Image 1 (cartoon, rainbow, N blue to C red):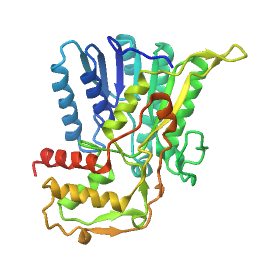
Image 2 (image 1 turned 90 degrees about the horizontal axis):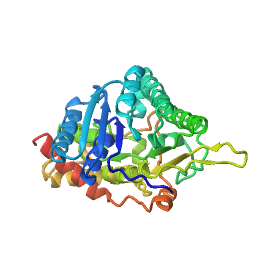
Image 3 (image 1 turned 120 degrees about the vertical axis):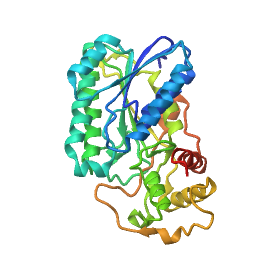
Image 4 (image 1 turned 30 degrees about the vertical axis):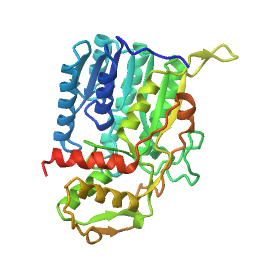
Length: 355
C-alpha cells in the first residue's frame, strides 16, 4: 500500500466545522509541521451554531500557534457547483476528505430535501471536481446505517447493503456507488468510511448522549428506545480521527486488470469500536460520569428520569462493526473505553455550559 507524506500537501476537508471534521483539522495541524488545510463548511443551523463556532475558534487558535502550517476557512454550500469548482481551481487540493453531509436518521424523515442536496448533489460536485482536477486520494464519510436491518453481526464490508431503512442510509449507499463509478471511469483513488456512532466532547447535540445530558440537566425525562435493548458500537471521536488520518495517507493502488483496463482504486472500511454496548449500560455510565464531573448533583435520582419506549421508525436494534480489514491494512484498532470517552465529554460539557 502506497503512503502519502502529508508535508506541504494541500488538504481540503469539507464539513470542517462539524464534529469529525473539526477534530481531524486539529489533529492534522498538531501532527504536521508543514501542511496546507482548506476547511469548508456551510455552518448551517441544523443544530446549535455556537458549538460549530466554538470548534472553528479552537482550530483558529491552534493554527495561529503553527506558523509553518496554512489554514484557510471557506464558508459555502457543497451543492454550489461553481464555488466547488473555484476552490479546486484555486487551491488544487492533493487530498480531499468529504465529511460534509446532513447527518442523522430521524431528521431525514422530516426534511428529505436537505439530504438530497447535501449528500447526493454535494457529493456529486466533489466527484466532478476530483475528475476535472485529479487528486491523490478522495476519502469520504459513509455510515453504519447502510447496513439497514441486517441480522448478521458484526457488520462486515462484504455484507450485502441493498436494503436501507431510512433516506439518510439510502443517500450514503448512493455515495458509495457514485464513488465506485468515478473510481472506475476516471481512476480516482477513493476510500469510503462507514462510521459507527461517534461520540465525544463538542459533539452533535442531536446524538443520544448529548440530548440525554441536556434533558437530565433540565430535570426532564429521557426516552430510551426499544426498551433499552438497543446496542450501539460507540466510537470515541479521537479514535475515528486517527483512523481517518491513517486511511487518507494510504490511497488504494491504481492498477490495470487482465483486460488492460483500470481496476477501480476503491475501498470501503468500517470504523467502529468492534464492541457493541447496551444502551442502558451506556446511559448508566453517562449518568455516573455527569455526577462525577459535577454536571448533575450527587443525589440525582436517575431512575425517576428515564422512560423505556418502543423503537422509532428508521432505527435498527444493533450496530456492530467488523473492523478486521482496517486492522489488517492499517494496524489500527480504536482503544478508548466508553467510560474514558464519556468522562471527557462530561468534563467538556461542564466547562462549555459553565455549570
